[in-house]
Image 1 (cartoon, rainbow, N blue to C red):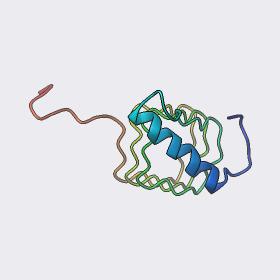
Image 2 (cartoon, rainbow, N blue to C red):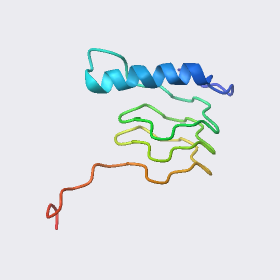
Image 3 (tube, helix red, strand yellow):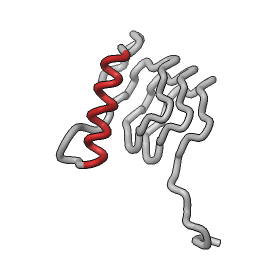
Length: 100
């Protein structure tokens, strides 16, 4: 996706996320979410599964990411100012007793 200042349409975002979920289940189906440079300001991404998504340079300002799974997502250069990050997953939790 090329960099844009236009807000990404909710239907387009829904389609990207649906394809991404398929890709996570089977890399031969669907496709990795490519949100590079996307304007997702104020987007509702609550509980979204964005594992491994490419969000490089995305505008996520004021986005609702509550409970989203961002493990292995590329967030370099992403704008997360004022985004709701409550309960997000950034890394897999280590099982108890591991690394202690």
